[in-house]
Image 1 (tube, rainbow, N blue to C red):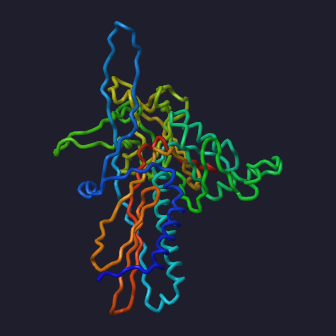
Image 2: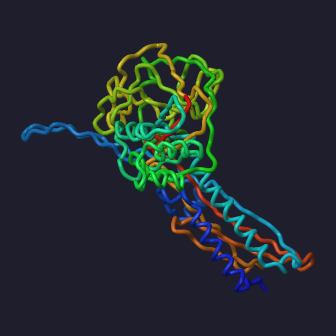
Image 3: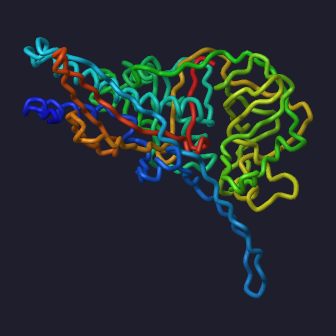
Length: 421
C-alpha cells in the first residue's frame, strides 16, 4: 500500500509551492513555451524554436513587376536540460518536531527557485551580445540609458525590457536617486533613500541580484580578416548532411583569427570597421557592433555570437533579411578590440521574447509505493514532492524536484552592462 500524506503535509506542500512561485523572479520576465512531453521524450528533450522573421520591402509602382523573395526561417535548439532535486531524510524521531519539516521544505524551495533564476541569468550573461561597457562605477541614469540606446539603435522592441543588476551596482544607482541634492517628498527619491529601491529606469524594470556572474579581464590580442568569408556569414534554415537535411543554429559562427591565446568564452569585443545596423531598416548606427566569444576551438579559431552578416557581396535573400552589420572598412588584419578590460560583475538586460523557459514534467508512477504530489506555478514550472518510508530503518525520504530548460532565442535582443571598464 502506498504511503499517503497527512493533512499537515498537504498544507506544508501548498505553502512550499506558494513560496516557490514567489521566488521565481526572473522566470516571470521571460517567455514560456509549454511542450508536448511525449514528443520531447522522443526527441531527446530538444525542440527547435523559431527566431523572429525579418522581412525586406521594395518600391512598387503599378504596372512594374516586383521581385519575389525567398523567405528564410531561422530557428534555435531548445533543450529541457535542467533536472534539479533537493532530497533529504527524516527519522520518526525527527518528525516529533513538525517545524523541522517545514524548515527543510522552505530550504528546498529556495534552492530550486534559485536554480531556475541562476539558469536564466547564466544564459543571458553568457550569450547576450549587446555589450555596454562603462568606465566608472555604477551610479548614473546615463549608464542605464546606454542600454536603452543600444537596443533602440538595433531595432529591439521597446516594451517588456528588464535589467538585472548586482547588489553593488544596483545600490550605486539607488544612491544616485537618493542624493541630498534631490528634492524629498519625491516618491522616486524617497523610495531610493528609504528602501534602496530603483524601479523603472530608462525603459527597464530593474531588479537587484544577491548573486551575479563575473567577467575577468580579457587577456587576448587578435586580428581578423574582414575581406573574406568570415565577414559574410550566410544564414540558412537547414543544411544537408549524410543523414539528409538538418536544422542550423544561426546564432553562432566559427571564425579564424590571428591568435586565440588567452581568449576565453565570455569575452566581449568589437571589430574595427564593422558597425551595427538597425535590423529592420539596415541603416548603420555608426557604432561598432559588439560580439561575444562563445568558445575557443584551437589556436586560431573560435566560435562567436552573433555571426557577422554583412550582405556585402552578391547577397542572398537570407543575408538581406538578417543583415546585422555594415562593413564601413575592411582589412585582412582588422583589430579585435576587447571590451572587458576590467574584472567586474555582469549585469544583464533583455527583452522578454529573447529568453525562454521550457517547463518539463516527470512521469512518476503514483502506485509504486511512494507518495507523490505535484503542482504547477503560474509560469508553468512544475514542482513535484515525493515521500517514501523505510520500515526497517524508520527513515522517511523526501525529495522536491523540478525539470526545465532555458534558451536564449535571440542573443541580439539581450546583453550585458559592465562597470569599471
